[in-house]
Length: 591
Image 1: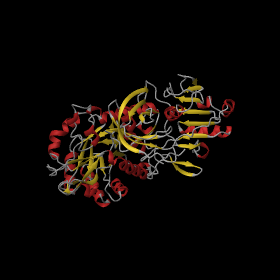
Image 2: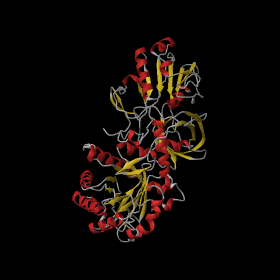
Image 3: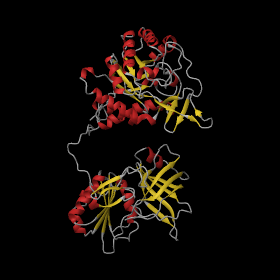
Image 4: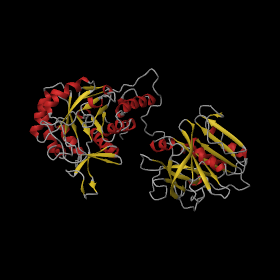
């Protein structure tokens, strides 16, 4: 099953696309004249749309190839299941678009002998590689079984002796699943001498089992997440009786008898209900933090939404759970000089420097309008000394603002800001002082990922009177102007936000809530998560980690309606999963 062909990396032109079924797409590309490779059934290519927002290419099995009379590959076709951003980009390609290909990669199915009578099995999108293999065999020299959730696809180029289709919903063929048409007994009755299969892992485990019982060999095409496809990263290993095997190099086709499938654990922890809500039921997205009720957990992050009115003409501001004001200081500030923004491949570095009109101006001019918008207004308070923090807090204490977010984590100022959030004593001191200066206002303390021991800082401010915590603020970063040979920002260091920081933010939020859960329930305080949140899926992850609410920042710059889309996505997710309240899944990922 080994393949000696050396893969190549090229850009090809899409010649034909079609949606063959909901979320299943056909994509055909033409091969350049200098593409002198042999593409074998069972092999795959690493694909990426041009342009693409994804870092990595996606492994997609070859479905069909067309060759010239001389045997040169002229076109390659793929069947693609849309299930994430990378495949979604591939599924939206049109004729004339460009596509990057790395391949052909992996091994192939062994050719059966003339004496063999094989059974070929495909499950869902796994039909693609085995149908490609079947199309190379003599007509009616094999049986083919295709199992789908609904309908059927990918069977155009095969001519089996017998075609059996199963569907979960009974829309075509035999109602049911593969075990309803393939057993040890049917293998013996049909006289199958070998079996080839590709599909979901539970299906392949079943195929392995019945083939062992029937005493025939099986060849199973496996799937695994891949980074390189070249055998270098070791991210796609498959567990076998012969040790770990690389799916991209020693596979994807493996002899069934050497594979080790994970045993089902009937006691495996799952917190996802199986019954969706009825059409009449609406999930409750509301929550309460320190006595303040939010209609939903989506809050506009400080410094990214102005005072709420700036985006009112392009998004439904009134639907948000809350809005954090721009960072406020006692005195007006002009912010930093020089370059203030630098886009990165998956984020944004900013060096704004807390430019704002000052708290007195905010109270007189911006606060009344913010309060009238509907969402919970949160005043983000910063300063350069304990005195300026407390004086600002005292002024906010006299207003109707519902909450204060204490910013001790901004990396873009030379005095104050992040300096107070790096060490426990300083963080506790400013928290306690602000709490005393504004005793009636619930206090959220915004933490820095740059703290040497963030959990210790969080614990210090909790003991000092914080009513809630928000994290993370931006991560310190640097950009260099290569034409001038010097740092881009005047302050050298600036703050990185956006998708690049999300995994870090999720880990820190998870760790903090894990620590919080070790405390008596009466001593725990809510956590508001932020850092790279751009979609409802991101929001769900943070809530499952234990966050009470989430803040959205940089995503709004890229998509002004990101927050309302997150609210809608959360509601639909909760309906689908059967969650009636956020508490039904909050913290479910904590172990």
